[in-house]
Amino acid sequence: MALITGIHHITAIAGNAQENVDFYTGILGLRMVKKTINFDAPDVYHFYFGDQWGSPGTVFTTFPFHGARKGTKGTGEMTYTAFSIPTAALSYWQKRLKSFGITISDVLTRFGDELIRFEDHDGMGIELIANDRDSRTGWTYGHIPAEFSIKGFFGATLNLKAKELTEKLLTKHMDYQFIGEENGRFRYGTKGEPGDIVDIVLDKNGRQGIQSAGTVHHIAFRTANHDTQTEIQNILWNNGYQVTEIKDRNYFRSIYFREPGGVLFEIATDEPGFAIDEEEAHLGELLKLPDWAEPHREKIEKNLTPISLNPTSYV
Image (cartoon, rainbow, N blue to C red; front, side):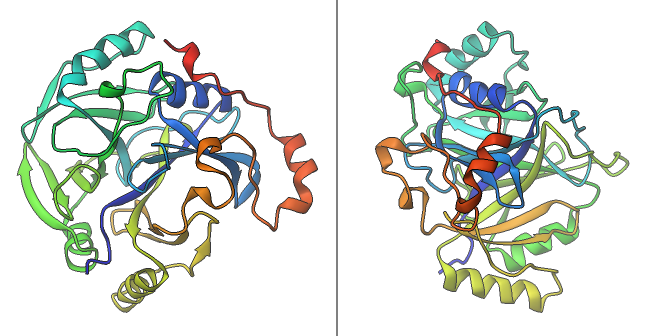
C-alpha cells in the first residue's frame, strides 16, 4: 500500500481575517469546516476551508495575521494552488471572478486541460483547472450552482532553482511518479489524478520568495494513519531528512521537514478528521480550541478579532 496518496491540505499566510473568510467562503464558495487557532501562535486564527466534510485533498487553510505586509512569490516556495472545477464551469468562473473586480488570466492550456489564473486579495496565487476526471462532489452554500462548485485541489506548483533532489524525494521516498514535462513544467503524481498533482517549475536565476501575507506556508501530503505516518517518518529519517516528531493537530497528526528546494513539507494523517468536536451540519460555526488552550479561552477570544460568516451575500 502506498504511504503517500496525494495532497492533504495547503496552508497559507493571510492578512485581514474577515477579508480572508469572505474571499474563500463568499467568492470561491468553499465551506468553512473549522475555526480554531494557530497551535504555535494562539493569538492568531487558523481557518480551514474545504468540502462538506473537510475531506483530505480539499482543505485550504490560512493563518490570518492582521496587518501583515504582503509577501513575494519566488524560488523555494509553492507559488500556485490549483483547484479542480468541471469543464462546463470555466466560463461561469470567468464571469464570476470578473464581477468582483478580480483580474484573471486568459484561458491557458496545460497538459491538455484549460485553466485560469488569478490572485486573492492578499496576492495568493490561485488556479482553477477545468477537467471532467474528478468524481468528487463540490460544496456550495447555495449561492454558487452545485454543478459549477469547486471540487477540491487539482494540484500545486513548486517554484525551484533545481529539481533533481526534490524529484528524488518525491519519486524515491514519497510514492510519486514522474508524469511528463511541458514547456519547462515537470509534473508528478501518485496516480496522476486531481488532488495528487505536484508540478515543478524551474527558475534557476530567480530570487528567493519572501514569506508573508499572500504566500503558502506549507503543503501537506496525505497518509492514512499513525502507522503509515511512522513508516514514512522512518524512511525520511533514514535518508537524511530532518523530520520533526509527530505533532498532534487535533484533526490529524503531522510531521514536517524542508524539501531540498526549501519548501516546507508536511505529512498529515487522514484520521481522525474534522467531525471529532462538531457535528457535520455545524462544522466551522464555533471557535474550537485544543484541550491545552481551553483554560485560556477567555484571553484567547479577547485577542482575536470577531469574524462573521456571510457567504451568500456574495451572489
